[in-house]
Length: 123
Image 1 (tube, helix red, strand yellow):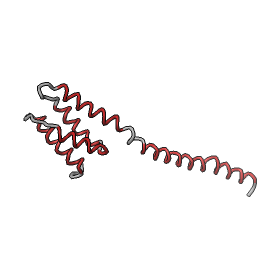
Image 2: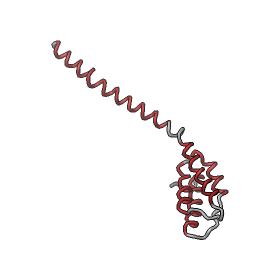
Image 3: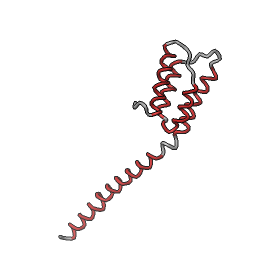
Image 4: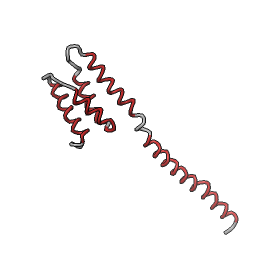
């Protein structure tokens, strides 16, 4: 092989092939690092959800709640399986006593979320 061919081969190898594989490895490394971070940042989101429950419970002097919001908040507890103990204790203490459509939906959702967090039902 001539000097030109060696130079062309070196340019191809060091100018295109190695940088490509370095970028692939760098992207994989960064993807692995980002998988670990969401578990650290979920506590504030769970605290916000529980704060919303607290505001709804404090706001209702007559025992009536915003039904759709209550159903949505109860359903969101499924997204936090790492806080299952606190969520189950909260759901056990939550008493929904109404007989309206949203009350029935909230009762059903409460049972479904409890079963999901206990591992009795896969959703």
